[in-house]
Image 1: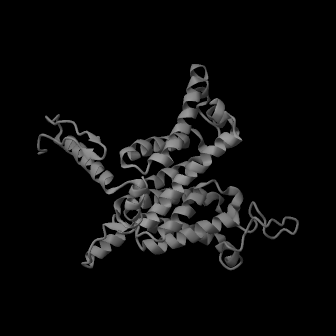
Image 2 (image 1 turned 90 degrees about the horizontal axis):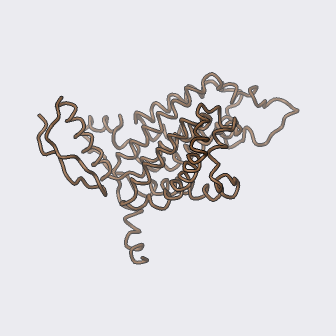
Length: 333
């Protein structure tokens, strides 16, 4: 085992990785961040203005946790209106998503989100912390290498396309994401006995803290058996992900369940929607070149079926262990 570790150390950290999964991560994260800024527009001044929900001018309210000097808003207070930063945030997320001046957009978005966290930590709901972490690593990743306007402009100038990125910052991001689950799972058992008894899902859905649930009946279905299955299933999925995602044989089998888990949380627990979707948005960084090729092959197969307008005599496309076992037996006309 030690010999295998030494043999794979350099390829793991210093090989070149396919740029398409990182481009997919950029697009998903950028779109979600843009939606967050749009949703925050009615309350932006209330959240971050000096006379908003946290007063920076009241002598009776001195709180060292807010308006930290490490945040941008601390240094611009009084000479740049706070509303200006909302417009800057929208612009940066658009540039980040379409991949135009991607590196600079990444820097700007990181600084702005960091400023939001330091100005008002009481409204931080997790997504800002996740984005700050992944944007920090993204400073060292060429997120605009492909599927971006930067790549299109490079091709117009006759420059060589960039199809790969350095592995080490991507690995650092992956490890940090895996640690979120590896560290949080023991805390679940230590701080909430519901995860031991299988009732954690019930108390989460029933609590007003996480938002009104439209499906409280699901926790009582089948005499409570369903809620126990969901609770223990969550533990199984979150426990397996940081261990098995590194192995090609199991990677898809843990990525799909944990993505579905977060999508289910976003549906059933409204107050953590952006946080749980932010986790889904970073999962593409675990995909590989083989995954993208298999997805492309499956997409081409489905598109051919739709374009044909009739049922073709084809063998099913079966994908296992990252390899296509059979392909279409009839050409799509």
